[in-house]
Length: 114
Length: 113
Image 1 (cartoon, rainbow over the protein chains, first blue to last red):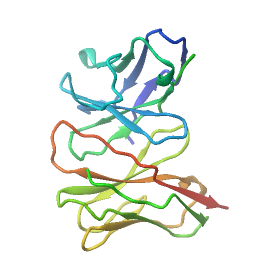
Image 2: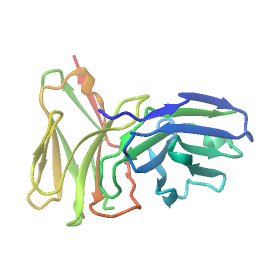
Image 3: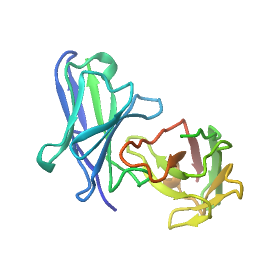
């Protein structure tokens, strides 16, 4: 089936540094999402993105977070500066449409902030 | 989106048919019932969805009660690869733009050899 890729699979950085998580969505998809899952806890929605704009973000999407998809390339999540509580697995997803369209998830990027 | 209630865990044996229940007593008329599953170290995987009628695909059969206040995901002849956390999620159909999946704890399905 369609695949969403995420790069890197694991990232370790020091608190206060900037990090960019990369997502390669399914090629014909138009809606993009980021979710956050802390180890042992349920997955939480962060943000969705369509037509170059953030459509909706949750309370977890702090001011230090930003997303973009320049020129149809990777869909990125940037955290600047990082904090210890940002340590989690971040999942990217994409779908052909908004609403109730099926979301395809990537394998996640495990971010460890020291 | 309305809330769902699922058992924390269920256990079965390879080759058996598993029935995973989900209660959604406050479901709205325009909400679809979606099922995703997730195994450790992987992203969630779509299983199936339905609105009113029962649905079937290569992975599962979704039985929806006539009043839509509950549904059951039926997994025939399970194997060890079906061991996962299964999430029952309600989503509004037709809403443009703003959309999210609201995950709960789901049901941990344990499969014994």
